[in-house]
Image 1 (cartoon, rainbow, N blue to C red):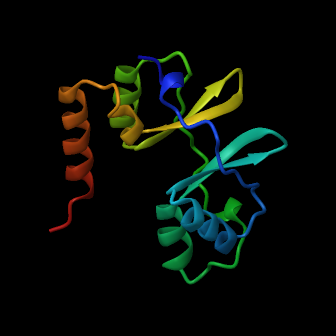
Image 2 (cartoon, one colour; image 1 turned 90 degrees about the vertical axis):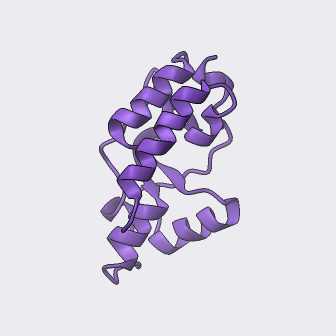
Image 3 (cartoon, helix red, strand yellow; image 1 turned 60 degrees about the vertical axis):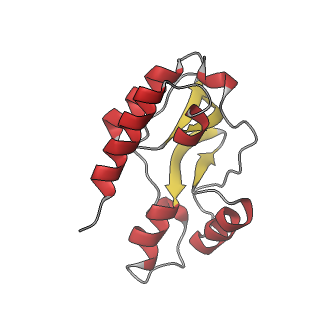
Length: 138
């Protein structure tokens, strides 16, 4: 199965000058943990709930634009990639969500949860175990 068959297409997006509290509110309202950041129709980053917690709240600096805390080094995937490629990309880069890009344009977002619809059980279990080991606390 291809990524474009599983990805979320109706994305909540913000610009790089959107303030952190507004992004956090959007995440809460939409029950999502990542929001793409676009400027002039170009994906320039993503902001995650972790970015907000670690790069803003923990530093006591929440009243700032998301460009100061967003993830800029993006790992993306194409819409015609298959589920196994998406899982391998997530594992390789330790990410649980991938922007789906086609010809430089954001088409959607695919998450590990989306991939449970069509991924092999073995690949998904391997991914979950890997993520668990990397985030496990003593």
